[in-house]
Image (spheres, rainbow, N blue to C red):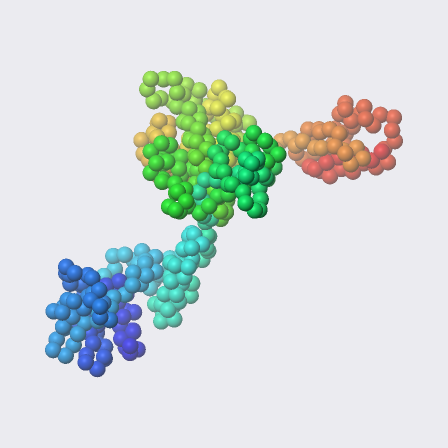
Length: 446
């Protein structure tokens, strides 16, 4: 292909994925069709079966292929990768009918901040996207040599853990791993118990069990149908559990018990705000329009700070743990400030959007929470007024004392000396040395 034709094709990238807008003469020389004939559309075909000849099925459209007496159309089309590998560039300027994108907009938006994809995806879309982008960069159509600034590969979700025990010819149980002629027995979850880093037979804890989670496949019959999970537990439970399973990058086995666990958490979150005993869906009477107490204000601030930081770092599982701690703390309180419940709902919304929208409306808001600002916090509330200091004697922990967070060495030592348990242990014994590490420990060397 000539340099002129390559330049022409690159200048008309909006037609990639369609037939090549070129024609070929009897000497296999390639010519561009007039721009007035763009885009070149595929003809209607009733028969797409291979003809047995080297030409593709499109060659059967003889009238379409014959462009003129001496010119024929190119019957090979660009692969679908050609379009899917630069879609992010078209998103920059999707309504531009003169250019693939505006150079000014491309310089403003590119590169993409974050690319999330599975490890297998990296061999497909990611690899081709980088290839096409580098070609475009070499030809001056984009301003960055790489399309994506940061890559995160999420871990694969495996099927549920499968438990296998082994018996010999006499029917006696053998501990895994085993060798030789043995009979594998598939066990149910209630037949095994966790012991240390592995599993053992519930009926005989001396027998170790093989526990493995395999990649989901039809042949193993371990595929989880998300439609079934959504029907039984709701979309929010499915979404929340997938984020709660563990670190995003880790390979994790599926567990229906885990789905049930987050489903119960969402139920507790609902009952923390909604009156579960009322005939209608109304606020729980313990939700009051009052200012949070000092302890509640600290808990709210720490939850906002932790969840915000976890979401920024894509630590979704620990963010959900923080929300669970919040629910546990407020469920037992007789006064639940409405502002605290609103903050919790906003923090929950990225992970359980459907439930959060319902709670937001019940809390008295007519507009969707999508337009509400993300919660903020007072950094001063993250600091403790008092800290607990371990007290050691000859390097062994013997007690703990509460002191002001900004206590001096002298104040910490005095508090340790005043503790009744410490007094009893050191009374009448000479102290050779006192080690004080502010905020950390006190150690009396006798």
